[in-house]
Image (spheres, rainbow, N blue to C red):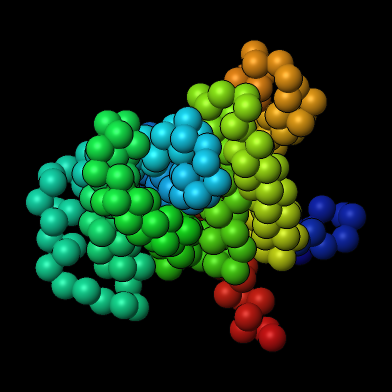
Length: 312
């Protein structure tokens, strides 16, 4: 009897469960998924700067068309500078420039990486020509054509990275495929608007202010919808490094919009709000990046949704 009690865990108070609580683990403690080998700050910087570049090209084209030369110059040079830094961050993470060039050897319409590589290859020279013409005041016709071309490609440049990360197996990225392009579009618009508020004169800053407010509203709505729809899988966007960055982005966005709207006649407030909006956009990209990596490192974000789909 004593041996039976020892085997069953009976201690005189009824049988006690001997099966431990289920834990989400894998062989040898390895994650279910191989986490992305992308590194910070290269890849979140690449995501942020690409969004800033694409949205800035739109702002530059609109400013050019409505007779705001100073704002147009800021936006066009900002677009080319951001794109150059974005490519530098991508190449640095890849390790060798030849690896980026190898991606241009084929074009595969079903691959966001392939489409994105060709998109950057076409957008970069257009953004550079538009910026050169705006700064040097030369070749106005070529500059206008390049401005229009970069603005045409700008939305895709700002959002294709959302499709790129959603095409991976990382749970928090893949399951957010519906909202992620909108998150990135809003984040890019926030950064471009912030750049205009920071560097352009106040008399021409109205389009930048409107773009920033629109960007903050779109980004906030998309992130909120994504968290709600993803349920448990969105936990890394509420906790850990991802959650901290996203909360910081929300606070900076609120402060930036308040400063942009209430401080229209105060140059210092306008510039501070612009800097806050740029930082908010960067924080969003860092938050999405780290939230995704955290979800790949925890097996439950892969196993639980699979079990739920099997039950359904």
